[in-house]
Length: 264
Length: 348
Image 1 (cartoon, rainbow over the protein chains, first blue to last red):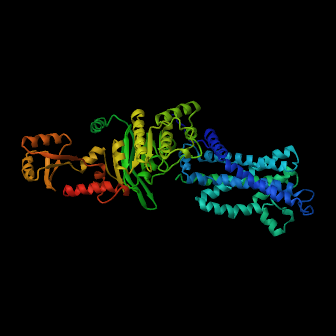
Image 2: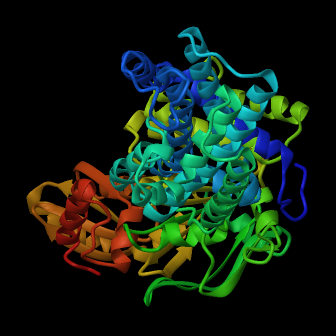
Image 3: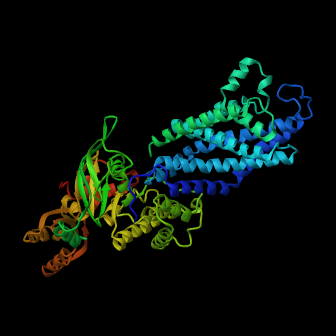
């Protein structure tokens, strides 16, 4: 039909097509949508609510706010971490089920392929994260401001993109499903638990603080706390800068590995 | 088919070459998978690579459709170099992979639409082409079913439809009927033929089913250990094995006399008496049967049964590699061949 010249790095139609596929797949598997929302909901309902009856208000980082308010941004961060990593790593599924070949053989630059795919993953993840925010608000969490909410979306995108890149790196370097589940449990859970999503980083001894400082999700959760409820451990510019750098590094590395991936 | 092959021979210089390889070689860690393959495929041809598993068929096809880079040698598809003009090659080729490569969560139509967009077809062309291929491959009414709900044959047909969607000049089919039942396989063969005849598309096919190559291909390259050991029309390949064989039965006591009198025909190259019947190696085909019957009649012999055996592509294959089976499940064919070998007294 129409012969195109050299591959364009940014190729709008294929990017949109890859994005659309992620949307369709997401909406088609109802169980996935429900389960992706249930887990954060349980955390908020069965950890956040009971903990708000525990007198924790004198702990550094929790002064003057309820535990549920404190936890909600952390759980949004958790959603970003899990869904983001999963979206990047789902390249393994495509490889396993053969569809990756069909994509990689098309006359489209690998960068456009992975960009469209990741944008799709980010979109579905942000939708999930916003649903969690809505649930939290319904449970009584008060958002600090409207501009803060929009800034929070920006933080969400950066955090999610970073972990999508991370998932992509795991997927391209590992290449099989079994290993992936092990990695998920071995790496992703510690990242979540040590991100300050459930306890304030300020209250920790210094050795633990340093571990949490090197965890990118710490800055994501902190940035969300800043923008959503107006309480945080670090200045917002620091959260933002760290997230941006980590996001660029992981996304670049992830798409580089993807571009080197064998079609077969 | 015979007439057709003669025709292509005389038109050799007229029909353009679609695929041309020159010493194409692929090595994996010192193991030579494809070994200096030189061939050319003409436009509109159905060309088959026939060989056992691990012969290098798939590797060869993967190089031609730019999934793998050759270690050495070169190849041109539609006039484009497979290494330097990879995108151009991809624009003019369609591929149906050996393993399923279709999104089972999406419907057939969505898969086709996805493919069309990835190949930069605009909306109008997309809709037109999707309707065309759905009609061509009889998939109308199934396009809104999820692929996971379709039968294996239908899934495969969607993949062929997709491979053909962008109107490629060349369609690569890597073991297209692998894992399909007999009916689905026959159906798919007819669709493949239709694509070739109606749309004039050049088709490259790999298979280890003899009958598939025999039924579909204008020319077949028999490939083993990465090398082409024979390349011709299925008819010529079969001829290369040897002559046809006629087995006829007359009353036991007249065997010797009939054998004697048949010696006058120069198209009978060998006569053997075996288990009460006569085995004649003949030059020619079915037309010899009435000739034999007439002759026997005129001499007063009564033929109680007569049968013509033609060599199959299987025989051709085994002719080149005696002792190597293509697939275990085709053992019965091999048994047949063995029986024939015994009967023909090991004439090869």
